[in-house]
Length: 138
Image 1 (cartoon, rainbow, N blue to C red):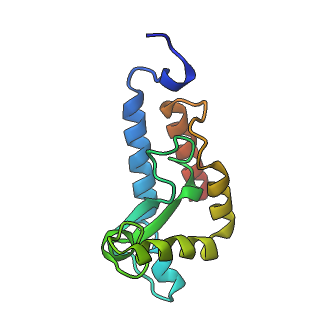
Image 2: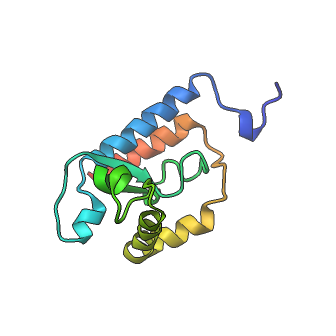
Image 3: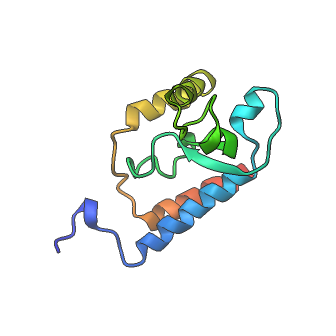
């Protein structure tokens, strides 16, 4: 197989992808739900990091903290008011509207870059960059 930028992942690179995914979830799990917080509630129960632009759609945004919102299970998967994975389309639309209103700079950046697929960095490099970014935020 000829190595090109899109298929040049090194041996063990997928392990770094999983480690970086775990770092994102660990980072999010120590924060309150962003939606609950905007409603005046401090909810730190069952928090997950939601990718605004799905991680399968953009390797560039997969580990970008502007693309991650800490949300509780009600606002991530089970809610009917503001919920990106709800079966209720209005709840999904409400989530997009919430992000636009509460994180406008992040929303604009994500809309501008949502079709950018490749970072030019290996998952190992992305993992190391993410780790340093998170350590500097503590």
